[in-house]
Image 1: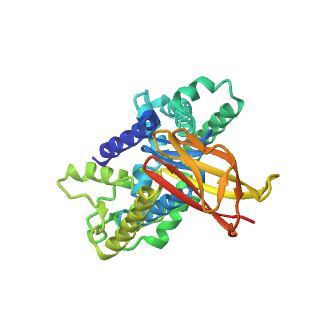
Image 2 (image 1 turned 180 degrees about the vertical axis):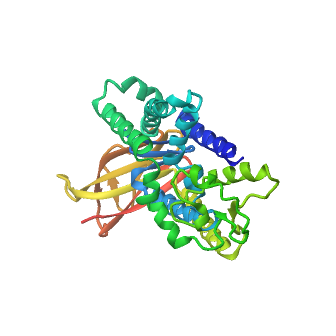
Image 3 (image 1 turned 120 degrees about the vertical axis):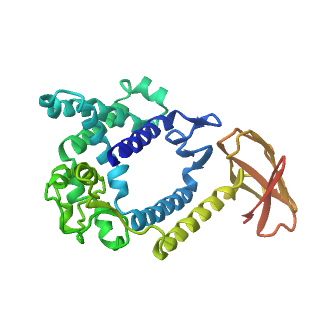
Length: 367
């Protein structure tokens, strides 16, 4: 039964979402946007906010992946993985263990604490779980976000429900543009005139459509109608009238898959080409000493170990300040140095930062 397969996928997806913040790689959360350092932790990599072009590339990859999945599999996301669908159905599954007369109220009672767990898990992607548990009541901001998310999630899954999927869901609108006749979808076989007319398929549909009327945008591909049809037809040794239909391996699917792969390769190349240590210099003004200028420097260390570097000036000039700079792991150090020029100093100088295994040269103006 498709229902059982969907439950397995939903439980695995939910468990992954809840447990991922607890996974640590190199002493950091596997996936988290770290608010104090304004950096994204992603499976061992750290992307600071001034490198968010990588996040934009990641978003571009997700867009390409969404387009490919939509072209090939249609609304499989909606019926199998979308939180709007999955959270409500998990609440219904739990409530199904209650007596029939209590299931409607029981589902609401189940969704209330379940929505709180989902809201808390969203906070874990910004605040470490242990810190979130410790500061949830102490911090008004953290508590406010938790309560606001809790209310919105509960409202969406317990009150709005499938009406959102049928009306304003933007992903549903996207189906009209990308889906074609070969896109995988739940469909009725109109060539078979011996339909039993039991109306079970329409009765179990969570969005209230009749799949026998043809493909409809509101369908979330949950396969509930397939299971209902199979239960009836199996008793009469008749093949189900409703099934997943479509062509996965085709030219359009290969085209979108190629675009998705190309975007992924660009993202990986951008991540692997990032240097561990970056050095920047900017002229700030003149100093009190004759023929001297003040420069502000910035050193970022994105490696897992501290680095020590030495500053130097190339050409007929010399540094008047301390040359040694120590930068802890995953930190940025800024400072100022004064450079005094001798005879024949051109309009620009070269300031070098050298350490173990690297040497970075930056050009700066010398008015």
